[in-house]
Image 1 (cartoon, chains in turn purple, blue):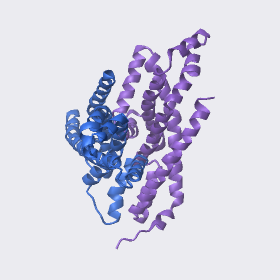
Image 2 (cartoon, helix red, strand yellow):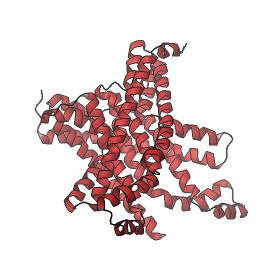
Image 3 (cartoon, one colour):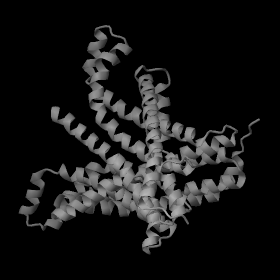
Image 4 (tube, chains in turn cyan, blue):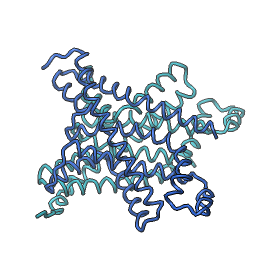
Length: 219
Length: 216
């Protein structure tokens, strides 16, 4: 007879909570870094010199066409043989930033391309420098246009961060694995873990939809 | 430590690539079938279908694929229902892709003008006939590029099956890296093989998209 014992899993709530906290911290770092990298790459692909455009394009295609777990393994297991030894957390954040950066670059680029020409011409005729035109006139509305896609991508990266538990980063999926290896309540533990992720993704989406208009555009 | 030449590493990875391709195909086809069934259930307005599919999509798109794999592989065995890692991976990836397919295709069906539904029902076509002869062909035209694009996500998703010990490309890469102590070379090769698999598909999806929009 099957008997379920959710209490045994829920009794480990501090572990779950800490794991969720680590997941959110990883995601926050990745979102900030990835967004910045994405904007930089989008700029490079649109306005950079030929070699810069080529590098940014190669980076975007390489990342978008390989699995996140391989990127993470390459950074965590592969780089030490070049003498670069990263902690699990550092490798996780780096992999997430690099991953999100590539997707963000494409998303931001789509937003920038949709900028009406007249806006840029008007800004130039007001004697704004190229940098000012980009950061004040082009970028904020571009981000606003593509924010829903960006939010989805950040949520995807948050869900993808479950893989970081594989290199011993103590995030949510790692905590759930730890719990089920302690009390052998695998079924209950993964239900609780999955529900926690579901909650996180809904909450993160809401949070980002709130943050975007307040801090990134519409100022 | 085992000494492998670069060719031996590549050869073993190429052999493992077959499993990545096989798993991708199973997940893609299975996901398409289940996704289509869910879509038809929604279009047929079966009682409760709208709600069920909504919750289904939210569940599979709102939780990590890795957790879904863990749940099927470790979670169910906790209940005494043991799946092999191959079937757990195939089922998890099928369900995961079906949730995406059903959403993608719903968008494509919605893109068909409403008048087409009205006209075909005025001709007394049943739902099956409407879908087959009127809505389906028009939705299909729009659906091909994003479907091909999603194939890339499926291929990349199969890499997670390595975590439950299924010996596809990533898992074999880890094994070889552990045996040869050359993780840099091995994971670079693994990444390049995924790239070689996914990039042409990405390019294909992009050219299909361009063609579609060119015709408009």
